Length: 406
Ligand SMILES: *Cc1c(COP(=O)(O)O)cnc(C)c1O
Image (cartoon, rainbow, N blue to C red; front, side, top):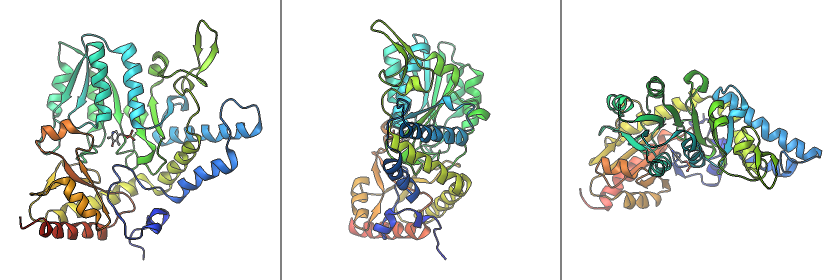
């Protein structure tokens, strides 16, 4: 019996059989079908989309648009024109921050983010607020890593400013906290604010029904959902995509151009200037198929069971402190080992082929808030096993001996 039923579908583990890859929050490994889909595109379909007058270009366009439709189904989006392909979460948030702010955010307005946001969902809003003289309001996080929902309501109800946007992550990449996205969205809507959900950490394992939640924007990266790097999705509600000006200008995004003016194409083309990552999008389509075939509930259940096991096992290591103890967590554990700097620890673990990340995890203000320099972070996905967690724990004991009796 294979203890990890999906591991054999990921070729990297055949090349590196002893690899303990515990860094899926940074990027997931890719199943064979995703790698094959990119290859298939180049070998069978390669031509530029939307412009060709010949059959191969038509086929490439059909394949590209078919992935948009797969995304529509995955997210339960009303119309595929509300799906925009991007290069990733960062690109999607920058696009929304720039274009939404151009029509919605001015002096006296505010944007709400949480203290646990990834820099990608913090800096674009911070910069937009500085430029447009708006306020950036931050929802505090408890030492356990839980959002302060009472303070969130207070911020929304603040009479001195009008909150126009709430930009929030579904799952924190630094602590693993799963935020109560339904309540967050409902409260924002009650106060007339739009909501952007950063689903980079949840898209592969959690169902996000765009219509049921009545979301305004949703962003994520392909490479954290078993898909290729350089791909991503921005969902935007039609009314916003119609109202927002384009972000980048160039080929493929126009209806008519003269030297004096340009009429833009409707969404999604309006926001997809230039040649897209065609082969990447083909791979992204295969990643959606892989997730649908496997089931997000299966993936989530596996991550949850590894989280429970790892939490239990790590708590047996003397001097180990888990950072982020929210009651609802995804497959991410941040921790510190007394007296050992996170970077030294991850370098030490690498000698046993254990890949875990150390540092601030692109959430420096959060680390400042928690008064720690950073953490070591182990993150799990469908291909990980309890045996790998055992190897991590064993190596942590060895590290304690190596770095001195502590
Ligand atoms: C990884 C991550 C991002 C940034 O994604 P990129 O793929 O680097 O653009 C943003 N937010 C969260 C929560 C993430 O985990």
